[in-house]
Length: 375
Ligand code: ADP
Image (tube, rainbow, N blue to C red; front, side):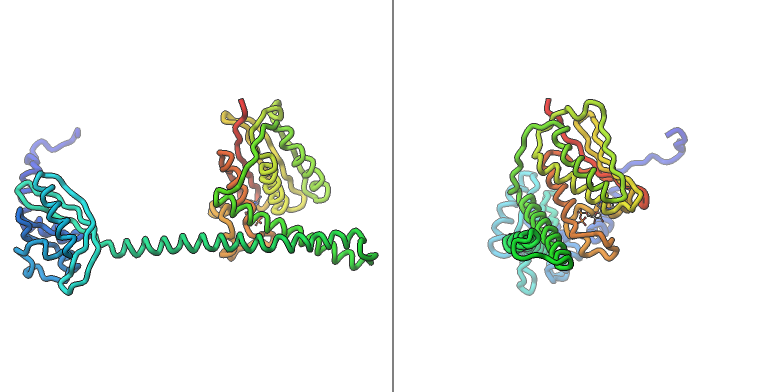
């Protein structure tokens, strides 16, 4: 230090430490959050801090001079004896044991014992009851969560068969297989048919998500050109754009359509359709949705952008959480069950990549991911 005071007395940390003395040392131990016990080479109590005394229900005066073995249940007292032998060689040791309070209450603890150079031991003790309770609660929650997932999967599965039958009958009715339909009846049956399709999509999403989460989803990877991968998506969206007053733009860097990828074609198409459907859902009339494909050093980048309502920064972190909107008060009328993006995220991570989201509220959003090219 350039401006150090050369007249200041010499700083000697050892002397300063000695000056702390016995009372200072006790103050340090008393301030500790852990239970601390200090004993001599014959395990007789020299000192214990208030936390330790409180845990076992003793006054300090009652235990000074008492051997540490009286604090343990029989089995743990044997463990303590064995570990004392280890410490005689100067080594620290850690183990779990059961303390016995003055009233006979048994307390599971973790002990870290360190030998003191002058002989004796300092033991730092952690009460494991709270930790054990937390562990049990965590196990319980994990079990409940898995039960909930199994329940959703089971219900979805049970719903799929009757829904598929309903869809089939409605489709036959629409085709006039049962009777000639008047215009108002046709309208109602068409609406019911459309709803059955939406329900089946939802059920399928729930089943797929549950499979992905369990690691049971099979992906049929095959080599495909970028062109082949996006062709159906592109033509599909051109039709949607004609129906809605929102433009669709397809942008591709020169040569990128010829790049080859190893992917599950149907699943990647599903992701792109999901991004694009959302983009259309959240973009007001007169706006624009685009699918852009370009190269990056690590592969081919797919980006779906829109000039829609945007997503607030704090919401971006949540949109991949399934069912998140259930607890969200600020719902947009177009919002569904928030399954789509959770599923997309699982599909893209199964391809070794990640979805990236950027947005500006009221202006635009962009969902993108990069897939490795086949060399
Ligand atoms: P869903 O569309 O069924 O609600 P998703 O998982 O596909 O489920 O989307 C979750 C939420 O993310 C949407 O409800 C919406 O709030 C937000 N979101 C997704 N895409 C966009 C977008 N392009 N613009 C604005 N918000 C979006």
